[in-house]
Image (cartoon, rainbow, N blue to C red; front, side, top):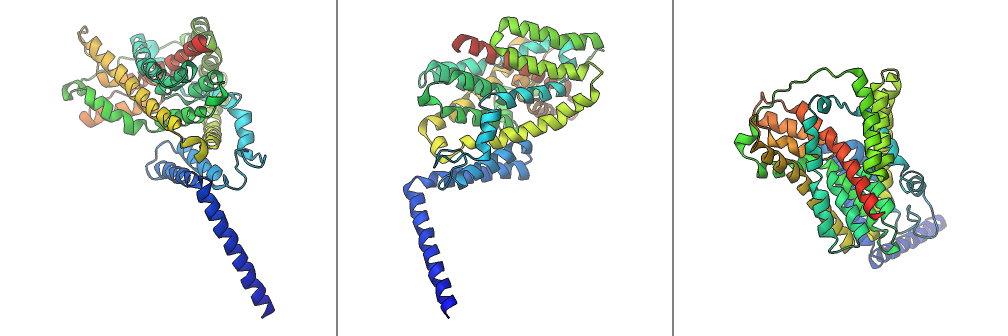
Length: 394
């Protein structure tokens, strides 16, 4: 009986502690952490049920749940009681010093085949045109934020997570705005993963049925091995001259491509494009989530940044499509304007989206090589755009 009484007393004390913790949770804006955990659950749902970039969204979602679940006790981001969790260590070691994005660029470079744009160099202009939204958003964001922050927000439109991280980390040094880097990182990666949802409505709104049915026969030519080896070297030199601040980003990207094309490092190329890229993507996703606590994320300026990021993404897509429509006014052999939307940096998601849209309109309309070529040019253009922004505002 004494044991039972002690147990009941103990349980009563535990219930009291639990109730006090719940009250403290509500009083200390803990409801924000609950909302963020729900958002984390949505990201996991999209990754598993909808198969939307699971290597990115699943770790982001789960990391969001981790940091918000402990936010009221020990806070895995180190904000409470001086506690520094493992995710904080990963953030400092891989994102605060820009290491993870740069290493990821090696893997991305090893995935990319520049053959389509080497055989059809005019596709590169679409990569440049699709950066239109970056500068439109910068102009709009400058009405609400300092120029350095506005420039960092604009780069979200490229849908290039690594570049967005590097630009934001270098430009945003004002202590009053350090918290917005979290929103910029999350927006860049989230919109990149949401390409299949965001881009199709924009493309359809700007094109007619007749334009979407335009066929573009692929007339690929054999590209010599020497050309493929020289291309990443030349692009690195040109990028370094045009936008010196982009040399790290473009250099790592082109180094990965050189590993792929040199022909003597096949096993290393496979490792970089598969194991390394997937591993770093997982670390990036779960580490970025350290910035997704309720206190940091559910603020007016953070939500404004998410809206501006969507604006940038939509206008980057629109810029590529409208540029293709403009060219069609002067070209005898018409271009399917949908491929212009692939000029954003979300490789290879955007290229696949356009290819699938072409097949949906006409089962014989294969746009994969053209859209991937434009997508690859967008990867280069977004890095150069990021370097130019750093050159102007760093």
